[in-house]
Length: 148
Length: 282
Image (cartoon, rainbow over all chains, first blue to last red; front, side, top):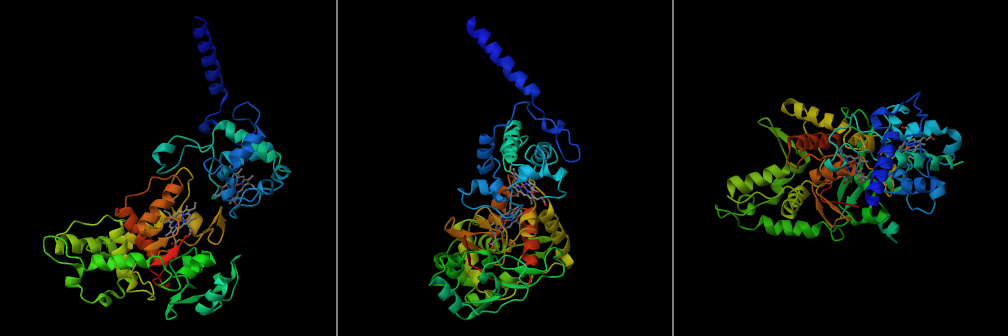
């Protein structure tokens, strides 16, 4: 009996969280910026930093140099260095760039990290999935805001 | 030491404009392999390559250590496979009781073949792999080889070697035109979860580091290529597959219409560079 109650409570919490999360097709852009948090849960900069350097997640260092991660070998040269990016952009603008950089930089090489529509020939195991989860996007944005 | 050896072995033909943040070696426009076979490393882009002014061999973008391995066949690890290719070439197989050598006594008859492939015949793109398997199946009565298996890449390397130093000169008009157009479309189409086209990396960003790799123009004049990363000879289409998987795209099949068209298109982008097979990359 008690077990059932706990399971039910956990279920409600989980679905509650799922409802609060904005689906990729529902993200609202205004001039390339996304004002509303994708999850309603404040981003965790420490996890954002981990996602940023993880080759299977953000892999942001593939294209961007970032002095805050000088301890990591090999920073890419394809995009601009991200030092001071928290000064150059607002949180809403950074969220827009991570969700779908094509909304900001036309024809950019930078992948859209929270998008599933309009892609071709996606490998089966990634089909219907975003590169980052909604919370990971929030965490990366929180991390970028610390790069002053 | 390596630097010294390299500079002694190459003929230092320096090119003019320094558009990119390249290392010193990357301004070399020609090397001599075995101190005698000249290889053109950079030249004016063919007029139909709209996105490039100059075409450049992948050799230019590799580290000095990797570059040096290609300068002498004794150092080039691909030659272990070329030797295996020679054994396979002389081996009798199939119901006709023949080896490749039974019909092709003189390997030098293949000079120029690699430089002109793929070509279009009877409405189909013909690659080196197709020609090799056509001989095996139709003339030897033997099993076809796997597209990127060691037997295929080794014999491909042996035959391609006969054209080393010759300028790539792939035909793109006449019957080839529709296939070339198809290949071009594939080259510029974004695919995969990362939503990238070949052109995003190899046309717009060559010379730039992508994490630990320096992007080249993705030229195929050096194939089959020995890669230090997997210590074997790699086929052109095997490389296409690898790049597609890296951007989380479902690759086309080796030998498919799509990859053959893409190979034809890519080969033509290198028209004017030298056949470098078997090249060494990382």
